Length: 606
Ligand SMILES: [Zn+2]
Image 1 (cartoon, rainbow, N blue to C red):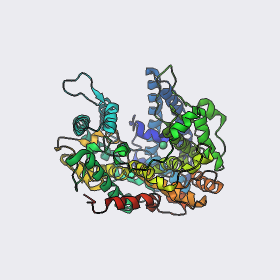
Image 2 (image 1 turned 60 degrees about the horizontal axis):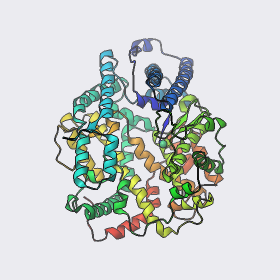
Image 3 (image 1 turned 120 degrees about the vertical axis):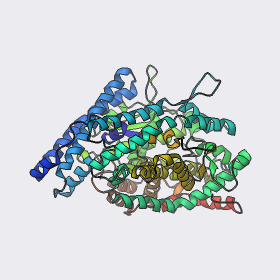
Image 4 (image 1 turned 135 degrees about the vertical axis):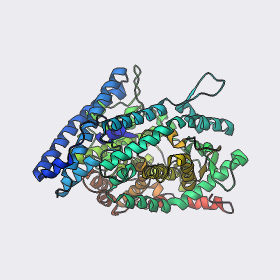
């Protein structure tokens, strides 16, 4: 579900090779630069970053599709070169601060400075320490294992993920949950020091702290952006609370008093280590008679669909909207199936190797409904990448970091029974009374995620700003988990625990708000496109397949890339300049009604 681009490099490795930073401010003042110099600087940055990004993409592609010690080293080196150049340009861009530039140039300067997720202090010793800390925390996370007492075998996160997803014995679930969270306390002191140093670096770049630096990427003042997120959350919160109440009640039916009748739900019972999405417990909460009456996996298998045909279905979706077919090289260079003779990264991803049209996907396709979905999602990234390839290098990305993921998911929302009928995969679509099961499953995945997607950075922003001191790291983490998610720790926690560090994105310094945004935006995009496709039915049954008008609107947004502030891009596709979570409510309206009936007379809230 990821895509590879220059900008993604800045979260892969952060800032290495930070020496040689400090372009002296006094020199800049003595010789104020001209607009012509600024233009030359931008031209140099775009040409250099383009070349390095293509090199890095090639090295990373080979590494991901042919894992050996050598390809790992080569890709790490290529990434380091690209990141170092990005950091260098970010620092050099500050020389042009205060210069009155044409809008396009000013935006490019800003993007250069904002491309970092971590700013190292100019003191080389501190910079080196910060780099080491982040690498060490990510390493601790990556190597994390739980070794149950008296057993030979240690459990990896993969093992524990499966346990949390499938096991229904509360004791074993608790054991797995506690076991995994033990990897994090050793990171606690490193994390504290990382916060200090990262803030120092952010302040040198002129931001109040690292959190403010992250929030500055959204074309509005950092604090206004935080308020915007609260507003969106409050739009969907009542629906989340209904879902929470229903799930809590059903979990009580399975687990009894381990689940309180009125309080927050214990975090180990929701099918996921972080309680971030709940689709794995669908069998425990499924309504009776909600079987849609068909199984896409079975249908695809029965028809002997192969991997190429699976991807062809995805491509056909986009050509039906009026997009050009994928280039010949896509079919020659992509990895669709797991090779038999070597190690590869199977996690699905979409690539744009040359930042023009060397598009590829890398998957290990299984003939399943899930991968049918994933292919549509990944191709969403590819078509986005190709649509903005006419933009200058620095604008070849999504309008903000939530948009890329949202586009892939928007396309996947159009995989409706009616769409499958049009493809000839299904004879007729089931009537909408069968939709509750499907909607509930989607809500367990996407609505349950919303408060989680929000709280990770709520916590980190407060940590970076100093509002949360180190001795309160864990306590406030759980306060936010309870406030937003209505989820509680399954056993008492102490200040020596460091539960945030048991989540990858915290340990590895990866901002998280983009996932919250993507989960809101995809419904807003879907509603707007469904309207332009003239869909009259319930929103969850609308597919934009074969609508040239929806395709035109979609492309109007995609082709802007990052060239304009994101409200312009949002307006191009939806006509609205504000993000709007009411589309979420529209999409799930039948489920909301059903949940209200189920919850009647039962406690709601925590
Ligand atoms: Zn994706």
